[in-house]
Amino acid sequence: MTVLPPAPPADLLRHQDPRVADLLLGELTRQSTTLQLIAAENFTSPAVLAALGSPLANKYAEGYPAARHHGGCEIVDAAERLAVDRAKALFGAEHANVQPHSGSSAVLAAYAALLRPGDTVLAMGLHFGGHLTHGSPANFSGRWFDFVGYGVDADSGLVDYAQVRALARAHRPKAIVCGSISYPRHLDYAAFRAIADEVGAHLIADAAHPIGLVAGGAAPSPVPYADVVCATTHKVLRGPRGGMLLCGGDLAERIDRAVFPFTQAGAQMNAIAAKAVAFGEAATPDFAAYARRVVANARALAAALAAEGLSVTTGGTDTHLLTVDPAPLGVDARTARGRLAAAGLVLDTCALPYGDARGLRLGTAAVTTQGMGEAEMARIGRLLGTVLKQTNEKAEKAEGARTRHVREAVVELTGRFPPYPEQLAP
Ligand SMILES: Cc1ncc(COP(=O)(O)O)c(C=O)c1O
Image (cartoon, rainbow, N blue to C red; front, side, top):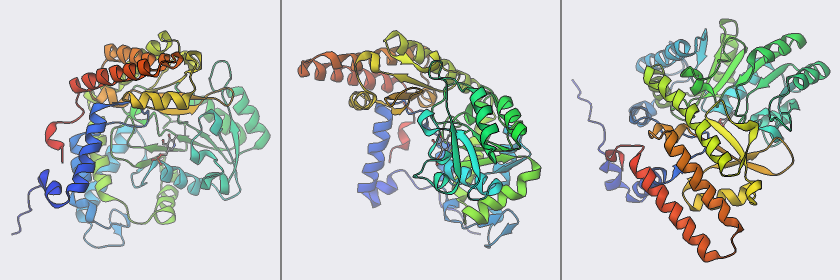
């Protein structure tokens, strides 16, 4: 009988390839000593990382469980069935496909299942927070489909459902997409469903961002309303980088064939096992409490940033993300992102509901995983204000000193909330 070797020790990579080990350690140090405020990021658990770094990475498995184009798939079949069953139970979906390599692959497969090239699709315009896959001319979506964009109200920052309905009536799209990279409020899925029904369109919910909150019961679920739900598994959901599709039994076969063989071949079985681990974690009361804390932290951060004089889009948030305009502090978003990065606050710029100027997008999924709470959000808000307000000062010396001071405060703060145990270091 063969005995499996033990999991490789952490120093194996260091011994064999110190240059790569140094890069991994450098990134771990960066993630542990700066504040990860990018709304799309999180820290997966060591169990998810273990599944990702497992021998399932070696296995070719084109097709679906019990219908593969390769031999030796008994074990990975069981892993995929487990991931599918857990996803269905977690989201109350009749069907789940866990093979998409990414959120974009999931959206591509949804379009492939429901649309033909040249069809009209109504989605949030990119200037208002639509994703690349919602009709960007630089993306397959904009090249192959005729996208019409809806927006948000310039004053409130909220989706204008009357405009969505008017555009749907005027353009008779084959599908309506609801979902965004930066919309901080819950979407009214029932309203989107009603509009889609009125014009005979499919409803595709791209829930890449809120799906982790949905899993934890902290956001409404699109599953009862959308024909197809596209999602990522690596944001608030805290799984491996990857995608997922949920739908009713009536569309199951079309969705599966749209993933394999239409848009993908071999599934990544280590990622699928890691998705199973993440779905298992997300089904626990601990995760539900985490999801609620993520939202409470985002609200606390929004309040702290408003107190520092930044303008918070929609006046706050229902979710893990918020967008703010730094203009009242006399700084543009790109400059702000650079200054904040130098001080150890890592975040993105984003579109704003009005004009061409960009804003800042922040999220609380990662810092909440680290165990930070509302007191830390208030502190982060003050640190961010300190960095941005210094732009009015001419004296470069004073600026540098303040950035160093904030950087030290960030190192102190993150030192109290390490994302990973020390033994994970390569
Ligand atoms: C709304 C939305 N759709 C799709 C995606 C694409 O996900 P991925 O980067 O995994 O392709 C994202 C990623 O941020 C997203 O926010």
